[in-house]
Length: 420
Image (tube, rainbow, N blue to C red):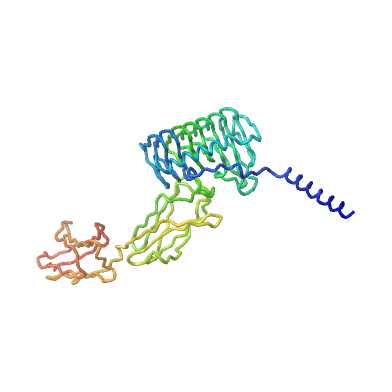
């Protein structure tokens, strides 16, 4: 009797597991292709020319393993260009394997060739389109609040995205977990926003101001761009960290003005501004709120109202909403406006002395002293090569004069002198 009861319990347990598995959503991690060396590329083709026209901003590597690489426009690249080198060779091999893997996935749902119009696709389902496809309007990918949810869309033909078409990610979906296998060419329409990794068997054309969040990779076909932005993914399937396009520091009066800009922002919570006297120990100066997610250029400004004398070092700490932080390059600023000196006597005598204060005198800088009469005519010019410089001013005509102190071709102070 005991044995029978135990068998009944075990049978019910197995039945419960079977029922549970049958009702759970199908989230399959096996649907992720191994990109190998190709994972680092935002744009890549195994065989084909690569032409970058217009102004392009690309986060990740770019390259071709067999074809011409030309940049008639401009390129801001955070990664590396690989043109027929060992990295591009490995990427070509790995990309072929990834394309084959995706093409052999079993279809779970065959859908129409017209995507978009607020259609919703779910993770863990291999969607197949048996002809060329078009993306029109908005396509929604719903992650169902499941970490690592994978999307697969296989298209047996070319793919075209219409002008201003978009892909929207909701409920935790990540563009780094979206894969498009396209047996043909791909045209990213003007002003469109596309998300996911495309592995195509044909040319890749990014039309005017199209934006790509993910990768566009081809096993055979040319690549062309036109004023585009592309953001790749890292090895952990996360969007690449934000890269500053500019970061500058400038002295204004007794302050230091810091400016920086970003081309795109993903998950950006805030910036922390830090300074240091030795580039080793940094202290926080303040915080500036980030834009969160943005596809536009954003300019930031921060004023250091109490800068160090002499050399100062600045850096930015960018923090995501999940708490992860990245650091900018370190800026070194030499504040020339705090150079202290004395000119005596005033009114001028037959000899005038200029003394540079010891702790603000930098021998690596070029110090000049210029004297002008009331008409603005230069009457004297000398290099201040020592901390103490004596000038012969006995031949100056009585009157009012104006001086300028110039350091490294930058005028940092002026004033009035009187000759009797």
